[in-house]
Image (cartoon, rainbow, N blue to C red; front, top):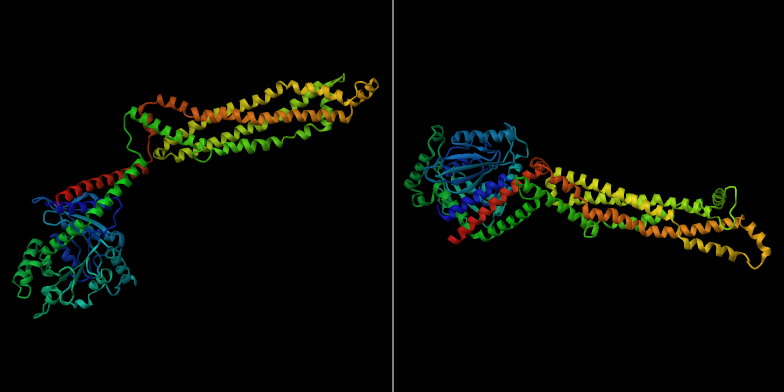
Length: 609
């Protein structure tokens, strides 16, 4: 087998493999044969050298048949394989015919309906050339009983979908006993291939022409010129078919017909099904030679895309516990890296924590009911209750303390709410980070475990954050700022005239007036405002230290400890992939292997030229 024959065979294998993988719909670098009642099925059988296609009246070919021929070593057994039955080999070609019919009926039913869904058949034989042929339903002019009224348009639309492809080669088969000028085959071929670069004309039924007539004007290109030479074919007669005449015998009879024909004897070397097969294979060889650079470029691009997809999907998982543990830790690190990017600003989301401190916390502090707690009526009540049976002499210290402690207790709510709000943001960032970790998409079980471990850790951090901010509030209430209260007696003294002893009674009365209690409420409000500003700064510090910082440093530490104690079986369960992802990687790996083999073989052919 020559290097170019090897390359043609490779193209066939690529097409077949891509078809299996869903990448190839047929038509590229393939010969599309068509036209009803012209003997196209017999032509295909002559090229193959086997009797394997269904026969009958009307439209027999009701689904496209993508036929890939693979030349094997001399003396090897012939066999056929269907894409829909990948593990079954057919050595009896009468069973191939039956399977084509059954598979057609499976989609179209036992009617004369057609379907664009192709049947893929590969034939391996030492008696064929490497070639891809597509047998299409023949064009028809009218619908018969059992067919829809649109059958004519449906068939033409299907045929056009194949022959319009720029890489498709048209095998236009016409009967010699009809006027070529009215041939639907040539008419459509001329429409889709006006230059004739992709069209091969085949003339059948030469032996059935009226006595005294011949088709030399067509075969020699005088009546209808094509860029490629016309090829005449003599198929088996119906009597030969009925007698099951072997295709090898039929080929010999065909050669004898042209060799002894007074009309076509001078063209005998360029007539017949064997010559047609070689002509088509040679044309395919020349097409491939001219397109090797573009084919190589396309294959290299496909390899790059597939390798990128494989990196995206991840490589297959090893079975030993050490490798599995390493894989799990790497996946956790990938998640942790994305989570930190959210917090640090590389990805969106971390700014919401700042929003809690800059907007939510100040707003909550402003809404605290200090006006009600420090109203004149409540100040009087609290101060009076604090004095007991003996009223205060100078300044109502116990009243002050009770008013301040009562006011500071309101800070607990916003402090805890801030810790909860940050906790909610962190949980949402965990969820987003898991979804954005591409490597984790393969392992839904591990995703769930990481999410559970991260959320459990965040709960611990939140509890510690709440405790810390409550401690901050309690610390403010447990020890009041002395300097603030030292100013109060001085202010009281300034309010009166210490040099005038006659004012003592009026001062005593003033301590129980509304003005006196208003000053107490105002002083407490000032102190609470000072504490509010302090907490507005310290609460975010505490939350970041206890929750955000810990999430960055030790979010999965407890999970790492648990993972290290698991057995190989448990680790394998964590790496139990989504079946759809496994199938996708398997298909991707097959395509990658195919394209790499194609590149290597094309490179070897290129060097051999």
